[in-house]
Amino acid sequence: MNNNKNKAKQSLKETIKKMAPAVFTAMIATSLGFVALFTSPVPMIQDFGKMLTIGLVISFFLGIFILIPILFTRDYFFTTSDKKQVKKQKFSETPSKVDKILDWVTKKTGTFRWILISIAIIAAAFGVWVDIDADAETDVETFMPQDTQELKDIHKLREVLGTTDQVSIVYESEKGVSYPVITWVDKLTKNIDTEFSEVVVETKSITHILKQMNDEKLPDEGSLKEQLADIPESQIKNFLNESESKGVISVGIKHLEADKLKQFIDDLNIYLEENKMESVETKVTGKAVLDVEMIQGLTTGRYQMTLLGMGLVFVSLLLIYRHPIKAMIPLLPIIFIVGWSGLTMYFLDISYTPLTATLGALIIGIGTEFTVLVMERFYEEREKGSEALEAIKLTNKSTGKAIFVSALTTIGGFSALLISDFVILNNFGMMTLINISFALVSTIIIMPPILLVLDRFVKTKVI
Image 1 (cartoon, one colour):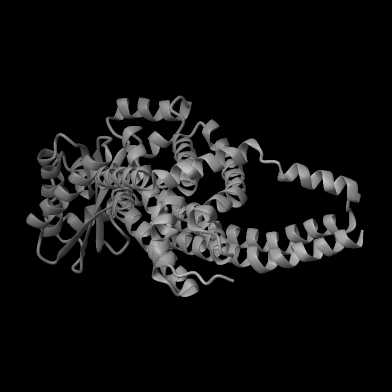
Image 2 (cartoon, rainbow, N blue to C red):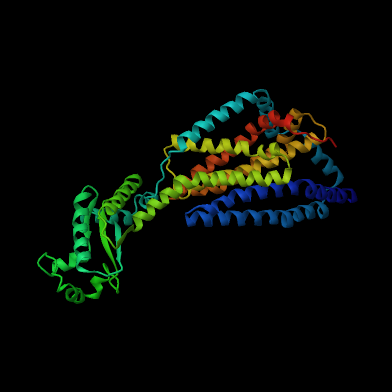
């Protein structure tokens, strides 16, 4: 009994001494990968990054201060008899099917290391190439369940009215709404309808109400102020502020795809600049403009987030290991996964959304945890005197199974998103499952060849 208690104490010391630092390193690297999400211009992505980081830190402390004590308590106070312990030890020493498979995979990856690395690089490079110009979907209607009554009602309303979308042109004059400004607004309101007839369904401004009061003609300069004062507040507030220094031209437009919407807004800004009035400032705004800004955030910001995440992870590992090669090794499989992910989305014809735009940071977070643990275990075996290939075998045998189980549990958790009726959640769940699978494959199959190839550049002190 005392012998079992001593073993429990020794196991606790070994776990804290060897496992805790490796997991802590993985947590730091993973957290910094998620921190890159804070730089996104999309608030929901920033909040997503915060929650991932908080959850990761909490999980680490729960593992250290709750899980390990529970395991120690089990082994210390609830020990089995010596005979059962011997049988259990003999059973554990018998290789399982998973051990045999991992051992076979390790041998093959060592033999074909250069072929595997070459295939991984080519696939990743092609994936990054096709992913650079990937589409970003920001149309909220495509995110919703397509058979909902609410969406059908929107489509029906659009058929009746011709539009449910609009942009607003805000104009501002320090001199207020004078007669020349009103004349300019009327001309602009009519010309935009004509200039962009393929997109614009209708345009409305304060001149629309004024004309209704004057047989479709603008009032003369002398009666302008009087007629503006006669307009009911419920109507005039839609087009002018109380001080009459700012006004709005409402432009109803057809429902456009993201790229066409951006082109229309760019063309409209150019047209306003060419037809501007002195002392009057104009600005195009509205939900459509926000959608375009989101497109910019998704198409340009996602790669910045990914590169920033990798940079932060590299710097943190460099500070911990004080060795550039060791700091780079865990990131190489992650770079491959980023490319593979883009290639998969290309072949599956999946556009980026505010959720799938976070995949780069998720890949860094999940993948770095796996690769850091594998590398730590590999160099632990090397320090014990094992040759590189033997160290890889022992690493996959001891750590590979744990990583395999961890990946499966993570896949199981994200699988719940696949049953969602919302397309945005369904696609995010599917791509997350694929990327976790890539992380597992990259860690078990690609990481060993990388370690074998780069081992010559890392000097290991044999204990």
